Image (tube, rainbow, N blue to C red; front, side, top):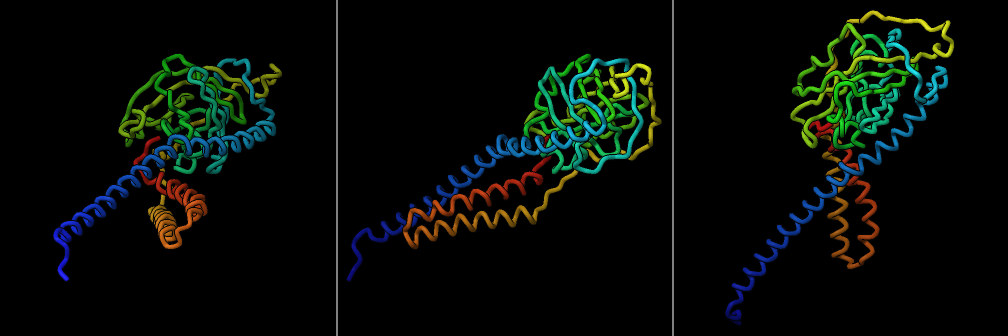
Length: 309
C-alpha cells in the first residue's frame, strides 16, 4: 500500500521538531543550571559562611576569656607591639576584625586556602599576628562567601581598623590603597614596623587585580593596662620568613566530576522513571535528592573556578 502523499515530508518535519525540542530543552536546562549556580555563589555561600562565622566567634570568645581579654572596645593608649607567638594551627580563630566605616565585623582564622576563606577572612600563614611587630596580612572574599571585603575600596588614609587578639586590642590607621597584580606577593614582605595588610580581588566579580589596603599600628590596649603600674611597652624582633603564597586551592577535579555525574544521573533517572511509570510523584521524591547532589556539585566546583576573592 503506497504511503500517503507528503508522508516523508511530515516525518522529516517531526524529526526536525524533535531535534529542536531536545536542543531547546538542553539550552533551558543549562540556563537554569547557570542561574542556580549564580544564586548559590551570591546567596548560598553566604549562608554557609554565616554558620561557620558563628562557630568561629564562639571559639574565639572562649580563647579571649582564657586570656582575660574582653571582646569589647577599649580605651587605647600609644601604639605598642606584643611578643611574637607560635603560629596557630590552620583553621583556628586568631582575631576579630572591625572596620566601623564599612560595617565590617568578622572573626579571622588562620590560613588563606579556599576552605579557610569560605569561613571568613584568613590570616596569611608565616606573617605576624595583629599587634605584633612586622607585616600582619589578612585576605578576604570580595563578592562571595558573605563578601567580608565588599566595600574595602571605600577606605581612605586615616580610617580606623580595629583588631582583637588574645594578646590585646589594637587600632590600625589606613595609610594607602593600591592595586597590584595577583602574582605580586611583595605586599606581604616583612616590615620593620607594625603594619597591617588587607587583600582582596579587584574589581568586584573579577580577579584581574588585587586591592591592597595598608595600615600602621596607631593605638594599643593590653590586658595589663587595667593596672597602670603593670603596663609596659613590648617589642619583638622580626623573624625572617618565606613569603607565603597568595592563594591555595583545595579543589579537586575528581570530586567535581563525580558529583556532576551523580547529579546528572539523578536527573536523567527521574525523567526516565517518570516517562516509564507516568507517576507525578517521582519528581517529588527525586527533587530533594537532586538538590542535595547539585549543592555538593557546586561546592566541589567552586574552588576550581578562577580566583575571585
